[in-house]
Amino acid sequence: MQSPPGYSNDVSTIKRLLKSLYRLKQAGHKWYDTLVRALNGLDFHITYADPRVFFVHIGKHILILVVHVDDCMFTGSSMKLIMQYKQKLNAYYALTDLGPVHWLLGIKIMHNQATHTISLSQLTFIVLPALRSPARSDLPRLM
Image (cartoon, rainbow, N blue to C red; front, side, top):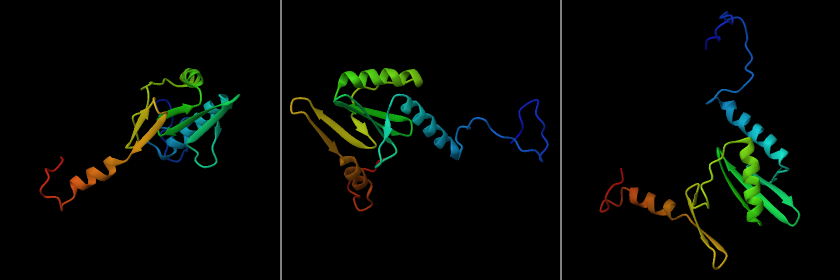
């Protein structure tokens, strides 16, 4: 690693980075710490069960935020609160709202507004490996 212009290139000196660099092992920890500070500013708390799940109680309502790397998903008991907190979080980070979730970590999520149900399907974890199986030579290979 070379020193920035204007700094000594002496190999016996030690330089301290003030910001984490992209693709370093510590960059994920730095991002998480930054995110936690921002969410604490919005009164979110970390769940005991999973450090990637945050929640906040507002009156009789609850808002839950699930974070995976740089993707996140809001859910809660009030659509109005979800929209408000999306705007608040957008003040910290530029967000892209992709609308209702349909896929999350390879799991298909289906909403039925009429029956107020959510169904989860992991069929892709069953079908795709079976299609790739060498024992199934009668099926076309996926490339």
